[in-house]
Length: 230
Length: 46
Length: 226
Image 1 (cartoon, each protein chain N blue to C red):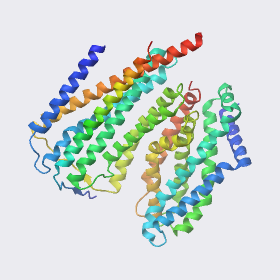
Image 2: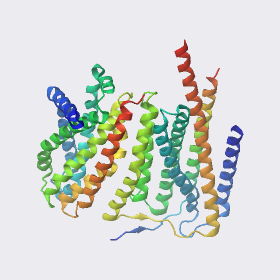
Image 3: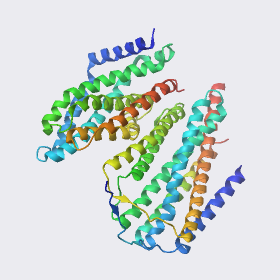
Image 4: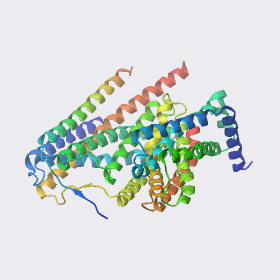
Protein backbone atom coordinates (compact mmCIF):
# COMPACT_ATOMS: atom_id res chain seq x y z
CA UNK A 1 0.00 0.00 0.00
CA UNK A 2 2.68 2.40 1.00
CA UNK A 3 4.63 1.88 -2.18
CA UNK A 4 1.50 2.52 -4.22
CA UNK A 5 1.02 5.79 -2.41
CA UNK A 6 4.53 6.98 -3.20
CA UNK A 7 4.14 5.91 -6.82
CA UNK A 8 0.94 7.97 -7.07
CA UNK A 9 2.62 10.89 -5.35
CA UNK A 10 5.64 10.79 -7.62
CA UNK A 11 3.46 10.41 -10.70
CA UNK A 12 1.24 13.38 -9.76
CA UNK A 13 4.21 15.61 -9.04
CA UNK A 14 5.82 14.65 -12.35
CA UNK A 15 2.56 15.33 -14.17
CA UNK A 16 2.14 18.65 -12.37
CA UNK A 17 5.61 19.70 -13.46
CA UNK A 18 4.91 18.55 -17.01
CA UNK A 19 1.54 20.32 -17.01
CA UNK A 20 3.19 23.51 -15.82
CA UNK A 21 5.78 23.27 -18.58
CA UNK A 22 3.06 22.67 -21.15
CA UNK A 23 0.95 25.55 -19.84
CA UNK A 24 3.71 28.14 -19.76
CA UNK A 25 6.03 27.17 -22.60
CA UNK A 26 4.33 24.93 -25.11
CA UNK A 27 0.77 26.24 -25.30
CA UNK A 28 0.43 29.17 -27.67
CA UNK A 29 -0.44 32.64 -26.46
CA UNK A 30 -4.12 33.33 -26.67
CA UNK A 31 -5.33 36.06 -29.00
CA UNK A 32 -7.54 38.32 -26.86
CA UNK A 33 -6.19 37.89 -23.36
CA UNK A 34 -2.54 37.25 -23.99
CA UNK A 35 -0.48 35.33 -21.51
CA UNK A 36 -3.01 36.00 -18.75
CA UNK A 37 -5.14 33.28 -20.25
CA UNK A 38 -2.64 30.70 -19.01
CA UNK A 39 -4.34 30.83 -15.62
CA UNK A 40 -6.99 28.74 -17.36
CA UNK A 41 -4.67 25.70 -17.37
CA UNK A 42 -4.72 25.58 -13.59
CA UNK A 43 -8.04 27.22 -12.82
CA UNK A 44 -10.30 24.83 -14.73
CA UNK A 45 -8.60 21.54 -13.71
CA UNK A 46 -8.61 22.56 -10.04
CA UNK A 47 -12.24 23.68 -10.21
CA UNK A 48 -13.26 20.48 -12.02
CA UNK A 49 -11.58 18.23 -9.48
CA UNK A 50 -13.29 20.28 -6.78
CA UNK A 51 -16.58 19.03 -8.20
CA UNK A 52 -15.60 15.36 -8.05
CA UNK A 53 -14.43 15.00 -4.45
CA UNK A 54 -17.71 16.20 -2.88
CA UNK A 55 -19.51 13.29 -4.53
CA UNK A 56 -17.03 10.88 -3.01
CA UNK A 57 -17.73 12.54 0.33
CA UNK A 58 -21.47 12.18 -0.09
CA UNK A 59 -21.33 8.52 -1.14
CA UNK A 60 -18.94 7.71 1.71
CA UNK A 61 -21.20 9.53 4.18
CA UNK A 62 -24.34 7.70 3.08
CA UNK A 63 -22.53 4.37 3.19
CA UNK A 64 -21.25 5.28 6.65
CA UNK A 65 -24.77 5.96 7.93
CA UNK A 66 -25.97 2.62 6.62
CA UNK A 67 -23.05 0.57 7.90
CA UNK A 68 -22.13 2.11 11.20
CA UNK A 69 -24.04 -0.41 13.26
CA UNK A 70 -23.36 -3.46 11.14
CA UNK A 71 -19.73 -3.17 10.04
CA UNK A 72 -17.69 -1.03 12.38
CA UNK A 73 -14.30 -1.40 10.68
CA UNK A 74 -15.59 -0.49 7.23
CA UNK A 75 -17.63 2.41 8.53
CA UNK A 76 -14.55 3.88 10.20
CA UNK A 77 -12.74 3.78 6.87
CA UNK A 78 -15.70 5.42 5.15
CA UNK A 79 -15.76 8.17 7.74
CA UNK A 80 -12.02 8.78 7.28
CA UNK A 81 -12.56 8.99 3.52
CA UNK A 82 -15.43 11.46 3.96
CA UNK A 83 -13.30 13.63 6.22
CA UNK A 84 -10.33 13.60 3.83
CA UNK A 85 -12.35 14.39 0.71
CA UNK A 86 -14.12 17.26 2.46
CA UNK A 87 -10.83 18.93 3.31
CA UNK A 88 -9.48 18.57 -0.20
CA UNK A 89 -12.77 19.90 -1.59
CA UNK A 90 -12.42 23.02 0.53
CA UNK A 91 -8.81 23.48 -0.61
CA UNK A 92 -9.57 22.97 -4.30
CA UNK A 93 -12.81 24.96 -4.29
CA UNK A 94 -11.10 27.82 -2.48
CA UNK A 95 -8.23 27.79 -4.97
CA UNK A 96 -10.70 27.58 -7.85
CA UNK A 97 -12.50 30.67 -6.57
CA UNK A 98 -9.27 32.62 -6.02
CA UNK A 99 -7.70 31.77 -9.36
CA UNK A 100 -11.01 32.59 -11.04
CA UNK A 101 -11.04 36.01 -9.40
CA UNK A 102 -7.41 36.63 -10.33
CA UNK A 103 -8.29 35.75 -13.89
CA UNK A 104 -11.51 37.71 -14.00
CA UNK A 105 -10.31 41.03 -12.69
CA UNK A 106 -7.74 41.80 -15.40
CA UNK A 107 -9.55 39.91 -18.13
CA UNK A 108 -13.09 41.19 -17.71
CA UNK A 109 -12.71 44.05 -15.24
CA UNK A 110 -14.72 42.47 -12.45
CA UNK A 111 -13.62 40.33 -9.50
CA UNK A 112 -16.91 38.48 -9.26
CA UNK A 113 -20.31 37.96 -10.89
CA UNK A 114 -23.40 36.45 -9.32
CA UNK A 115 -24.12 34.09 -12.16
CA UNK A 116 -25.25 30.47 -11.91
CA UNK A 117 -21.85 28.84 -12.13
CA UNK A 118 -19.88 31.11 -9.81
CA UNK A 119 -22.62 31.37 -7.21
CA UNK A 120 -23.14 27.61 -7.11
CA UNK A 121 -19.41 27.07 -6.81
CA UNK A 122 -19.24 29.52 -3.91
CA UNK A 123 -22.11 27.65 -2.27
CA UNK A 124 -20.21 24.40 -2.61
CA UNK A 125 -17.25 25.99 -0.86
CA UNK A 126 -19.45 27.36 1.94
CA UNK A 127 -21.26 24.07 2.44
CA UNK A 128 -18.04 22.13 2.88
CA UNK A 129 -16.50 24.73 5.15
CA UNK A 130 -19.58 24.36 7.34
CA UNK A 131 -19.10 20.56 7.18
CA UNK A 132 -15.54 20.92 8.48
CA UNK A 133 -16.65 23.36 11.18
CA UNK A 134 -19.30 21.01 12.46
CA UNK A 135 -16.80 18.16 12.49
CA UNK A 136 -14.36 20.19 14.53
CA UNK A 137 -16.87 21.49 17.04
CA UNK A 138 -18.97 18.39 17.67
CA UNK A 139 -18.33 16.04 20.54
CA UNK A 140 -15.79 13.58 19.19
CA UNK A 141 -17.84 10.42 19.45
CA UNK A 142 -20.73 12.03 17.61
CA UNK A 143 -18.86 14.01 14.98
CA UNK A 144 -18.87 11.28 12.29
CA UNK A 145 -22.64 10.76 12.42
CA UNK A 146 -23.48 14.44 12.55
CA UNK A 147 -21.08 15.25 9.73
CA UNK A 148 -22.48 12.41 7.64
CA UNK A 149 -26.02 13.74 8.12
CA UNK A 150 -24.87 17.22 7.11
CA UNK A 151 -23.18 15.73 4.05
CA UNK A 152 -26.50 14.20 3.01
CA UNK A 153 -28.20 17.57 3.41
CA UNK A 154 -25.45 19.26 1.41
CA UNK A 155 -25.79 16.64 -1.31
CA UNK A 156 -29.54 17.23 -1.54
CA UNK A 157 -29.01 20.96 -1.54
CA UNK A 158 -26.40 21.32 -4.29
CA UNK A 159 -28.72 20.60 -7.24
CA UNK A 160 -31.44 22.78 -5.69
CA UNK A 161 -28.94 25.63 -5.31
CA UNK A 162 -27.81 25.29 -8.90
CA UNK A 163 -31.33 25.22 -10.31
CA UNK A 164 -32.59 28.11 -8.21
CA UNK A 165 -29.65 30.35 -9.05
CA UNK A 166 -30.04 29.49 -12.74
CA UNK A 167 -33.71 30.52 -12.56
CA UNK A 168 -32.70 33.69 -10.76
CA UNK A 169 -30.31 34.56 -13.51
CA UNK A 170 -32.81 33.72 -16.23
CA UNK A 171 -35.23 36.13 -14.65
CA UNK A 172 -32.71 38.90 -13.90
CA UNK A 173 -29.98 38.71 -16.52
CA UNK A 174 -26.57 39.95 -15.55
CA UNK A 175 -23.16 40.09 -17.21
CA UNK A 176 -21.92 36.65 -18.10
CA UNK A 177 -18.25 35.85 -17.99
CA UNK A 178 -17.61 33.85 -21.08
CA UNK A 179 -14.36 32.11 -21.85
CA UNK A 180 -13.44 31.81 -25.51
CA UNK A 181 -15.12 28.91 -27.21
CA UNK A 182 -12.87 26.57 -29.13
CA UNK A 183 -9.52 25.38 -27.91
CA UNK A 184 -6.59 25.25 -30.27
CA UNK A 185 -5.33 21.60 -30.38
CA UNK A 186 -2.03 22.43 -28.64
CA UNK A 187 -3.99 24.21 -25.96
CA UNK A 188 -6.25 21.22 -25.60
CA UNK A 189 -3.27 18.94 -25.01
CA UNK A 190 -1.84 21.22 -22.33
CA UNK A 191 -5.28 21.45 -20.76
CA UNK A 192 -5.80 17.70 -20.61
CA UNK A 193 -2.39 17.04 -19.07
CA UNK A 194 -3.21 19.54 -16.36
CA UNK A 195 -6.66 18.02 -15.77
CA UNK A 196 -5.06 14.65 -15.17
CA UNK A 197 -2.22 16.07 -13.09
CA UNK A 198 -4.47 18.05 -10.74
CA UNK A 199 -6.93 15.20 -10.32
CA UNK A 200 -4.16 12.75 -9.41
CA UNK A 201 -2.58 15.29 -7.08
CA UNK A 202 -5.97 15.70 -5.39
CA UNK A 203 -6.17 11.92 -4.98
CA UNK A 204 -2.66 11.92 -3.47
CA UNK A 205 -3.68 14.55 -0.95
CA UNK A 206 -6.89 12.65 -0.12
CA UNK A 207 -4.93 9.44 0.36
CA UNK A 208 -2.37 11.12 2.62
CA UNK A 209 -5.08 12.74 4.72
CA UNK A 210 -7.04 9.49 4.84
CA UNK A 211 -4.00 7.62 6.18
CA UNK A 212 -3.51 10.22 8.89
CA UNK A 213 -7.17 10.10 9.94
CA UNK A 214 -7.04 6.29 10.03
CA UNK A 215 -4.03 6.39 12.35
CA UNK A 216 -5.81 8.87 14.60
CA UNK A 217 -8.89 6.64 14.71
CA UNK A 218 -6.76 3.63 15.65
CA UNK A 219 -4.99 5.54 18.41
CA UNK A 220 -8.36 6.60 19.82
CA UNK A 221 -9.71 3.08 19.75
CA UNK A 222 -6.63 1.72 21.43
CA UNK A 223 -6.88 4.39 24.11
CA UNK A 224 -10.55 3.52 24.64
CA UNK A 225 -9.69 -0.17 24.92
CA UNK A 226 -6.97 0.51 27.44
CA UNK A 227 -9.27 2.70 29.48
CA UNK A 228 -11.82 -0.12 29.56
CA UNK A 229 -9.32 -2.74 30.56
CA UNK A 230 -7.63 -0.65 33.24
CA UNK B 1 -34.06 38.37 -22.68
CA UNK B 2 -30.75 40.19 -22.95
CA UNK B 3 -27.51 38.93 -21.60
CA UNK B 4 -24.59 41.28 -21.83
CA UNK B 5 -21.30 39.57 -22.49
CA UNK B 6 -18.34 41.21 -20.80
CA UNK B 7 -15.38 41.29 -23.15
CA UNK B 8 -11.79 40.80 -22.01
CA UNK B 9 -10.18 44.14 -21.44
CA UNK B 10 -6.71 43.94 -20.01
CA UNK B 11 -3.63 41.79 -20.26
CA UNK B 12 -1.74 41.68 -17.00
CA UNK B 13 1.00 39.21 -16.33
CA UNK B 14 1.07 40.04 -12.63
CA UNK B 15 -2.26 38.36 -12.07
CA UNK B 16 -1.04 35.25 -13.86
CA UNK B 17 1.95 34.91 -11.60
CA UNK B 18 -0.07 35.82 -8.53
CA UNK B 19 -2.44 32.96 -9.36
CA UNK B 20 0.36 30.47 -9.91
CA UNK B 21 2.18 31.48 -6.76
CA UNK B 22 -1.04 31.31 -4.74
CA UNK B 23 -1.77 27.79 -5.96
CA UNK B 24 1.80 26.64 -5.35
CA UNK B 25 1.96 28.14 -1.85
CA UNK B 26 -1.42 26.69 -0.87
CA UNK B 27 -0.45 23.21 -1.99
CA UNK B 28 2.96 23.34 -0.37
CA UNK B 29 1.36 24.54 2.85
CA UNK B 30 -1.06 21.61 2.65
CA UNK B 31 1.80 19.17 2.18
CA UNK B 32 3.74 20.65 5.09
CA UNK B 33 0.66 20.45 7.31
CA UNK B 34 0.00 16.85 6.31
CA UNK B 35 3.63 15.95 7.04
CA UNK B 36 3.37 17.54 10.49
CA UNK B 37 0.16 15.64 11.27
CA UNK B 38 1.74 12.40 10.06
CA UNK B 39 4.77 12.73 12.30
CA UNK B 40 2.57 13.79 15.23
CA UNK B 41 0.37 10.74 14.76
CA UNK B 42 3.38 8.41 14.50
CA UNK B 43 4.98 9.83 17.59
CA UNK B 44 1.95 8.80 19.63
CA UNK B 45 2.40 5.17 18.67
CA UNK B 46 4.28 3.13 21.26
CA UNK C 1 -51.00 6.91 21.21
CA UNK C 2 -51.07 8.04 17.68
CA UNK C 3 -48.18 9.87 16.08
CA UNK C 4 -50.11 13.12 15.81
CA UNK C 5 -51.06 13.00 19.47
CA UNK C 6 -47.39 12.69 20.42
CA UNK C 7 -46.53 15.63 18.14
CA UNK C 8 -49.29 17.64 19.81
CA UNK C 9 -47.93 16.82 23.27
CA UNK C 10 -44.44 17.97 22.30
CA UNK C 11 -45.87 21.12 20.70
CA UNK C 12 -47.95 21.91 23.75
CA UNK C 13 -44.98 21.41 26.04
CA UNK C 14 -42.87 23.86 24.04
CA UNK C 15 -45.68 26.42 23.88
CA UNK C 16 -46.26 26.19 27.63
CA UNK C 17 -42.57 26.53 28.45
CA UNK C 18 -42.25 29.51 26.19
CA UNK C 19 -45.37 31.12 27.59
CA UNK C 20 -43.93 30.91 31.08
CA UNK C 21 -40.53 32.33 30.29
CA UNK C 22 -41.13 34.26 27.06
CA UNK C 23 -37.39 34.35 26.45
CA UNK C 24 -37.30 33.32 22.80
CA UNK C 25 -40.13 35.49 21.57
CA UNK C 26 -39.05 38.60 23.42
CA UNK C 27 -35.50 38.24 22.16
CA UNK C 28 -36.62 37.75 18.56
CA UNK C 29 -39.04 40.64 18.68
CA UNK C 30 -36.51 43.13 19.87
CA UNK C 31 -33.82 41.82 17.56
CA UNK C 32 -35.94 42.11 14.43
CA UNK C 33 -37.07 45.58 15.41
CA UNK C 34 -33.46 46.66 15.82
CA UNK C 35 -32.55 45.19 12.44
CA UNK C 36 -35.41 47.08 10.80
CA UNK C 37 -34.16 50.31 12.35
CA UNK C 38 -30.51 49.65 11.48
CA UNK C 39 -31.35 48.89 7.87
CA UNK C 40 -33.54 51.99 7.66
CA UNK C 41 -30.59 54.08 8.79
CA UNK C 42 -28.33 52.47 6.25
CA UNK C 43 -30.65 52.80 3.27
CA UNK C 44 -33.10 55.64 3.98
CA UNK C 45 -36.22 53.97 2.58
CA UNK C 46 -38.59 56.92 2.64
CA UNK C 47 -36.17 59.06 0.66
CA UNK C 48 -35.91 56.51 -2.12
CA UNK C 49 -39.25 54.73 -2.46
CA UNK C 50 -38.43 52.74 -5.59
CA UNK C 51 -35.23 51.40 -4.09
CA UNK C 52 -36.98 50.73 -0.81
CA UNK C 53 -39.46 48.57 -2.66
CA UNK C 54 -36.68 46.59 -4.31
CA UNK C 55 -34.83 46.01 -1.09
CA UNK C 56 -37.38 45.60 1.65
CA UNK C 57 -38.20 42.01 0.73
CA UNK C 58 -34.61 40.98 1.15
CA UNK C 59 -34.19 43.01 4.34
CA UNK C 60 -37.27 41.50 5.92
CA UNK C 61 -36.12 37.93 5.31
CA UNK C 62 -32.51 38.48 6.29
CA UNK C 63 -33.75 40.08 9.50
CA UNK C 64 -36.09 37.14 10.14
CA UNK C 65 -33.31 34.65 9.46
CA UNK C 66 -31.02 36.25 12.02
CA UNK C 67 -33.82 36.61 14.53
CA UNK C 68 -34.88 33.00 14.08
CA UNK C 69 -31.37 31.71 14.76
CA UNK C 70 -31.35 33.44 18.13
CA UNK C 71 -34.47 31.59 19.19
CA UNK C 72 -33.68 28.22 17.62
CA UNK C 73 -30.75 27.53 19.91
CA UNK C 74 -32.90 28.47 22.90
CA UNK C 75 -35.54 25.97 21.82
CA UNK C 76 -33.14 23.08 22.34
CA UNK C 77 -31.74 24.53 25.56
CA UNK C 78 -34.98 23.48 27.22
CA UNK C 79 -34.18 19.85 26.44
CA UNK C 80 -30.69 19.97 27.84
CA UNK C 81 -31.71 20.70 31.40
CA UNK C 82 -32.61 17.86 33.74
CA UNK C 83 -31.39 15.20 31.31
CA UNK C 84 -34.59 15.48 29.37
CA UNK C 85 -32.86 14.39 26.17
CA UNK C 86 -31.96 11.04 27.65
CA UNK C 87 -35.58 10.61 28.65
CA UNK C 88 -36.58 11.30 25.04
CA UNK C 89 -34.08 8.73 23.78
CA UNK C 90 -35.33 6.07 26.13
CA UNK C 91 -39.01 6.62 25.47
CA UNK C 92 -40.67 4.49 22.79
CA UNK C 93 -42.13 7.60 21.15
CA UNK C 94 -40.77 8.15 17.64
CA UNK C 95 -37.98 10.75 17.67
CA UNK C 96 -39.31 12.51 14.60
CA UNK C 97 -42.40 13.41 16.63
CA UNK C 98 -40.18 15.34 19.05
CA UNK C 99 -38.62 17.11 16.09
CA UNK C 100 -41.94 17.90 14.45
CA UNK C 101 -43.48 19.21 17.66
CA UNK C 102 -40.53 21.48 18.28
CA UNK C 103 -40.39 22.68 14.68
CA UNK C 104 -44.09 23.53 14.78
CA UNK C 105 -43.61 25.43 18.04
CA UNK C 106 -40.72 27.39 16.54
CA UNK C 107 -42.84 28.06 13.47
CA UNK C 108 -45.59 29.54 15.62
CA UNK C 109 -43.10 31.75 17.47
CA UNK C 110 -41.56 33.12 14.28
CA UNK C 111 -44.98 33.56 12.70
CA UNK C 112 -46.01 35.57 15.75
CA UNK C 113 -42.97 37.79 15.28
CA UNK C 114 -43.86 38.29 11.62
CA UNK C 115 -47.42 39.23 12.50
CA UNK C 116 -46.19 41.83 14.95
CA UNK C 117 -43.44 43.20 12.78
CA UNK C 118 -45.10 43.34 9.38
CA UNK C 119 -46.96 46.53 10.33
CA UNK C 120 -43.67 47.93 11.67
CA UNK C 121 -41.96 47.26 8.37
CA UNK C 122 -44.81 48.76 6.43
CA UNK C 123 -44.71 51.87 8.56
CA UNK C 124 -40.93 52.31 8.58
CA UNK C 125 -40.47 51.68 4.89
CA UNK C 126 -43.70 53.25 3.65
CA UNK C 127 -44.55 50.07 1.83
CA UNK C 128 -47.65 49.58 -0.18
CA UNK C 129 -47.25 46.49 -2.31
CA UNK C 130 -47.77 47.06 -6.00
CA UNK C 131 -48.37 43.39 -6.71
CA UNK C 132 -51.08 41.12 -5.40
CA UNK C 133 -51.04 40.92 -1.64
CA UNK C 134 -52.78 37.60 -1.43
CA UNK C 135 -49.53 35.89 -2.42
CA UNK C 136 -48.26 36.76 1.05
CA UNK C 137 -50.61 34.17 2.55
CA UNK C 138 -48.48 31.58 0.77
CA UNK C 139 -45.06 33.17 0.84
CA UNK C 140 -44.85 33.96 4.53
CA UNK C 141 -45.79 30.53 5.92
CA UNK C 142 -43.79 28.57 3.35
CA UNK C 143 -40.72 30.75 3.77
CA UNK C 144 -40.93 30.68 7.55
CA UNK C 145 -41.28 26.91 7.54
CA UNK C 146 -38.19 26.60 5.32
CA UNK C 147 -36.09 28.51 7.83
CA UNK C 148 -37.60 26.86 10.88
CA UNK C 149 -37.50 23.24 9.74
CA UNK C 150 -33.82 23.30 8.82
CA UNK C 151 -33.00 25.59 11.71
CA UNK C 152 -34.57 23.29 14.30
CA UNK C 153 -32.74 20.33 12.79
CA UNK C 154 -29.32 22.00 12.70
CA UNK C 155 -29.76 23.43 16.17
CA UNK C 156 -30.20 19.83 17.30
CA UNK C 157 -27.03 18.85 15.45
CA UNK C 158 -25.09 21.32 17.53
CA UNK C 159 -26.54 20.16 20.85
CA UNK C 160 -23.37 18.80 22.29
CA UNK C 161 -20.90 20.92 20.37
CA UNK C 162 -18.70 23.53 21.93
CA UNK C 163 -19.51 26.54 19.81
CA UNK C 164 -23.23 26.05 19.58
CA UNK C 165 -24.26 29.64 18.98
CA UNK C 166 -21.85 30.07 16.08
CA UNK C 167 -22.49 26.66 14.57
CA UNK C 168 -26.14 27.21 13.79
CA UNK C 169 -25.78 30.19 11.45
CA UNK C 170 -22.63 28.71 9.90
CA UNK C 171 -24.47 25.56 8.93
CA UNK C 172 -27.99 26.91 8.38
CA UNK C 173 -27.24 29.80 6.04
CA UNK C 174 -25.49 27.93 3.21
CA UNK C 175 -28.10 25.19 3.13
CA UNK C 176 -30.94 27.71 3.18
CA UNK C 177 -29.69 29.83 0.28
CA UNK C 178 -32.19 28.45 -2.25
CA UNK C 179 -35.07 29.09 0.15
CA UNK C 180 -33.74 32.54 0.95
CA UNK C 181 -33.42 33.31 -2.75
CA UNK C 182 -36.94 32.08 -3.43
CA UNK C 183 -38.56 33.91 -0.57
CA UNK C 184 -36.82 37.25 -1.16
CA UNK C 185 -37.55 37.09 -4.89
CA UNK C 186 -41.19 36.23 -4.25
CA UNK C 187 -41.59 39.02 -1.67
CA UNK C 188 -39.88 41.54 -3.92
CA UNK C 189 -42.11 40.40 -6.79
CA UNK C 190 -45.21 41.17 -4.76
CA UNK C 191 -43.94 44.48 -3.41
CA UNK C 192 -42.62 45.86 -6.68
CA UNK C 193 -45.18 44.19 -8.93
CA UNK C 194 -42.48 43.80 -11.57
CA UNK C 195 -42.74 40.06 -12.10
CA UNK C 196 -44.71 37.02 -11.11
CA UNK C 197 -43.86 35.31 -7.84
CA UNK C 198 -45.40 31.97 -8.84
CA UNK C 199 -42.18 30.26 -9.85
CA UNK C 200 -40.46 31.23 -6.64
CA UNK C 201 -43.34 30.06 -4.50
CA UNK C 202 -43.08 26.71 -6.21
CA UNK C 203 -39.34 26.61 -5.44
CA UNK C 204 -39.96 27.31 -1.74
CA UNK C 205 -42.70 24.70 -1.65
CA UNK C 206 -40.41 22.10 -3.21
CA UNK C 207 -37.64 23.04 -0.81
CA UNK C 208 -40.02 22.65 2.13
CA UNK C 209 -41.20 19.23 1.03
CA UNK C 210 -37.72 17.88 0.37
CA UNK C 211 -36.11 19.15 3.52
CA UNK C 212 -39.01 18.36 5.83
CA UNK C 213 -38.80 14.77 4.60
CA UNK C 214 -35.03 14.69 5.07
CA UNK C 215 -35.28 16.14 8.58
CA UNK C 216 -38.00 13.73 9.68
CA UNK C 217 -36.10 10.75 8.34
CA UNK C 218 -32.73 11.71 9.78
CA UNK C 219 -33.69 13.14 13.16
CA UNK C 220 -33.68 9.74 14.80
CA UNK C 221 -30.09 9.22 13.66
CA UNK C 222 -29.05 12.57 15.12
CA UNK C 223 -30.81 12.03 18.43
CA UNK C 224 -29.15 8.65 18.88
CA UNK C 225 -25.83 9.74 17.48
CA UNK C 226 -23.51 7.81 19.73
